[in-house]
Image (cartoon, rainbow, N blue to C red; front, side):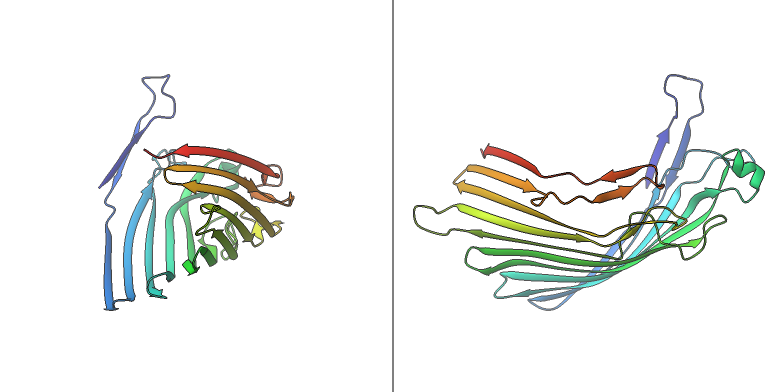
Length: 262
C-alpha cells in the first residue's frame, strides 16, 4: 500500500492538503529449465499523485500505471557472459489533459481522461569476452504513444522517447606485469529521434555520443579520468514540451577521481 500527502503551499497552514493512497501489488515468477537459462514474468502496479482539480471542483485522482514484463536470461562462456532479452508493456491512466471545453481549456482547466502506453523490447549483453576485455552492450526499441486523449491525437508519440536506443561500453585492463591495474574504456551511446511535443509538431534529431576513460586500480586504491562527449558533439538532450525549452547535451567534459576503499 502506498500513501502520499501533499500541500502546494506549505507557507499557508490552512491551504488544502491532498491525500492519496493506492494498492500497488508486485508479483513475479521465475522458471529455470537449466543452470544457464532462466525465464521470468512479472506484473506490477504503481501510482503517482496528480495535484489539482477538475472543472467541477473535484480533486484529481492519482495517475496509475500497470506493467507487464516477460523475459529470458542466459549465461555463456562458463558464466563469463550473460544476456537478457525482455518485452514489456506499461499503461498509464488518469493522465491529465486539457478540458474539451474550449473556454475551460483557455482558463487552464484539465480533466483526467488521458491514457498513454509504452511497449518495447530490451536486449542487454554483459561480461568478460577475453581476459581483461569486458563489454556491456544494450539495445532498446520503444513504441510509446497516446492511446486516449481529448486534445492530443491518438497515436502520437510521447515526448523525449526514442524508438531506437543503443549503447556499447568496452574496457580493457592489464592483467599482469608492472602495469597491472591500468585500464582504458570506450563507450558509444546512440539515441534515435524523439518527438519534442505531444502534438508531434517537431522532432529532436538523433545523436551519437562517445565517452572514454582511463583508470588505475591497485588493491583499495582507485584513480580514474572520465571523458564525456569525447568529440564535443553538439546535440539536444531533451525537450520540455515545446520549441522554447530545449536542453542541450553536456559538451566535452573531463572528470578526475581518486578514492580509497575501507
